[in-house]
View 1 (cartoon, rainbow, N blue to C red):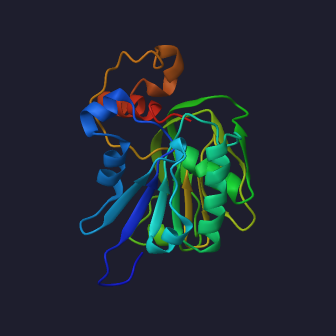
View 2 (cartoon, rainbow, N blue to C red):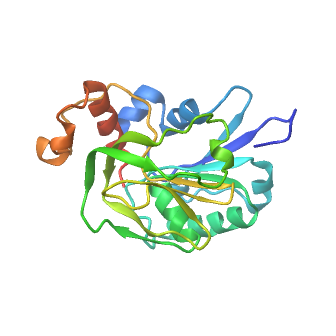
Length: 238
């Protein structure tokens, strides 16, 4: 994802505002993403797209890749910044820039490139799900470092929107019983992942949006750490 010997440079397109908790504990979501995805020797820049902050077109070529975060907004909404984000994502695809979309990012990436997204037909997906990886999918640069990709993953889901139809030329590489498009790729430069990739952290279990009626039977055997991870993911909700 860059020229050998040259500093790799990435950008986070942040589609949500920092919560007070994350600002206090981590200094903002930017630091959470960099700790999760960043490696030594890389440069990461932050663009708060939710507040209308975007990279200049003449800056884009400088970047090796982009990450689009989760968001409480609907990926199919018509807020000005969402429409501008869609235009940027189309440009990045045309330039074959590497783009990783997570949750809202997964959905808005799909929308921008010609797919369809909307409210999940079966309602909220909250709980522990088994996500099955499709066999023999095409090579993707994001997954090159994985020597042995597992046939299935157990993932805590929390979303009410989903991809209905992937863009032309996209390949669905992961599915679950409740969500038909958990992951998709386009070529070797686009990767969308429905669920957030979050660092485990200590949060208050008393969050008003995590009552027992929302967690479902699948959560009975989930560990305390996994529940904390779920609640933290709700702050990025989509």
